[in-house]
Amino acid sequence: MEILRYAAFTDRPDGGNPAGVVLDADGLSAGQMQVIAAELGYAESAFLSRRSPGRATVRYFAPEAEIPFCGHATIATGVALADREGAGDILLSTPVGPLDLRTRQVGNRFVASLVTVEPRVEGIDDDVRNELLQHLRLTVEELSADLPVQLSFAGNIHPIVPVRDGAVLRGLDYDYDGLKGLMMAQGWGATIAVVHRLGPDVFEARNPFPPGGVREDPATGSAAASLGAYLRARGDVAPPATLTVYQGSDVGRPSVITVDIPPTGGMTVSGGAVPISA
Picture 1: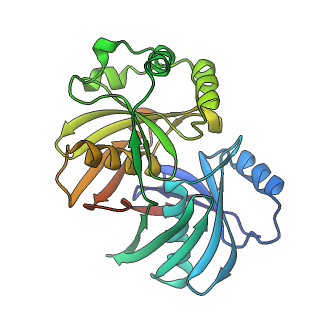
Picture 2 (picture 1 turned 120 degrees about the vertical axis):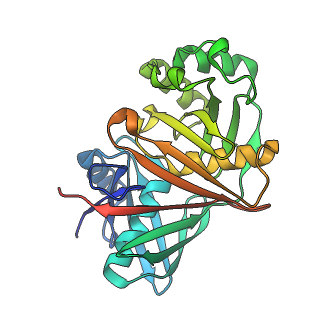
């Protein structure tokens, strides 16, 4: 068994979000996958099994738990496959449903794109919202005046928390244990997307990830997709549109995530990935 290491949503090994990738995990139990993910210590790792031409099954593990869907580990998987077998398309069977994963060559590197499951957006209970803000150590005055806090799903549920300016985003310092408890109680197994709008279709983001045992995620493809779904549902973008999300600079691993927002259906999340040394 070979454990590959890739940084996704970047073109440099010290940027983006690292992911472990195992392309032949048929002989591994869920417990073994969890141990490998914990030893790697990355936000998530992807394990492929039941591979056949154009198809495979994938499972995702964070250091402390299995995750239904992970954008950056899927992008890393696509590039890892392309590095070995050339660009192409593969249909992935995931715990949240089938995902189309496509790779193409751009210059001397590969770029991967995934199409998410059908998204949905819903409101958040006032008491839950208030507790969320308490654990994020954010005041109502620090929130965006134009964009509300809502829940958005494009494979994982992500609370979308827009803040008023970049200074609030830079100063984010949350209560790890309190936020983890709230997220576990609410069934939010992925990240909180704290975002600031830089332009009509450009955002910067920070993503706490305590359910996975990670203080902050450097690049979160599923959260970026959920942000795209949130903007479409609110009518804040005119599809087809392309959303750019900058993330990771606050933890020293800058990343760029691109989300194509169609008029209907799943979001298309794209990015590059590069191998990193053990």
